[in-house]
Length: 350
Ligand code: NAD
Ligand code: WQD
Image 1 (cartoon, rainbow, N blue to C red):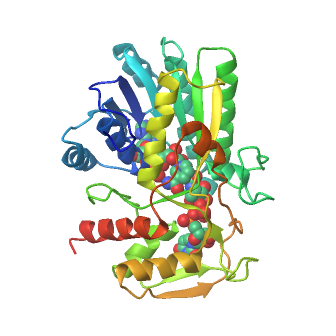
Image 2 (image 1 turned 120 degrees about the horizontal axis):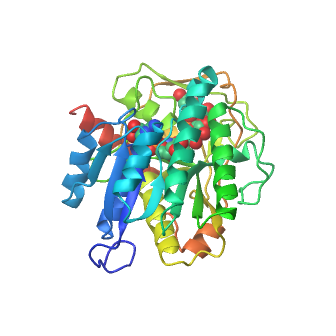
């Protein structure tokens, strides 16, 4: 039996994974291959490298097919789909994701995150099987009024061009589904962290990490002097901001289940939306304490002012994903942090 409780049954269909060499994409390719899917990865290597293919092969015994294509090139996307008419589903991870950079260069974000989506949908909707999974984000909820956040919580005005591309992306998919055979699942991720337990693949942030966990592991490794904790005056239990940190392998498995749902035509709407989180909020100080416990390292940190644009708290109500997808997270925060630390040590040869 596989880890998802499904007997491996040989090839189950060809799945296109765009951005499949990135952080979440690579873990999803592993889970798809473990479940017997054929995978074809399209990535332009703007935030990844072909070394990830070797990591995937070391874990699964198989390299996915890989094509280096920039999805902003419409003709290249058309040509790709013209030569791969046997694709049964697409998981679309390819996007730029740095919030600060999106404020500085909005057109880069609108071009990459929106044009690429449109070109892929234009070709996918010509195929008999137009099954599509979209990487959305809890950022669409902004600072939600009620915790935990359900899928019905109102979408708030985006706080960054990046966040706006996720909202517009969801709308483009919904509008397209009304006039085509498109069946789509929008997955709103909370805060993905961690790495594969083998430490063969993980997160590879370019430059100075903006996200908490890679900043913590790089600080513990001595690459950064100290972690700045952005604010301890939030109305939370210890004053630091609260998020829902989900192990990337749990997140990856949800994509396989969502794709199975579309392939088996079990979806009840042409567009369905699911929150993917653990359902548990953790403060920045709690993350630091958990990290110190699992790594045995004291972390050098100081409290500084709030980071502009940050919200107080966000954690998921996961009832819908639990009951309809039959998915729930298996890993704890400590396990996720331990895997992130193991990965950081591996890539620094420590
Ligand atoms: P990532 O940067 O590690 O992976 C994205 C991959 O897409 C990279 O390999 C990159 O080279 C590729 N790519 C980017 N633009 C491309 C293009 N034009 N053509 C082809 N390939 C392209 O990011 P990730 O953390 O794995 O995120 C995956 C998706 O999930 C993104 O859509 C992101 O917005 C979304 N998401 C991420 C988070 C998070 O915190 N990591 C949270 C919510 C949603
Ligand atoms: C987590 C907490 C920080 C760094 C961002 C995007 C969001 C989503 C995930 C894609 C916050 C605090 C952080 C540091 C800190 N991406 N922190 N010191 O802000 O929840 O979400 O990534 O969709 O769109 O906005 O994640 O990891 O940056 O921060 O104190 O050096 O850690 O203030 O409370 P965030 P994060």
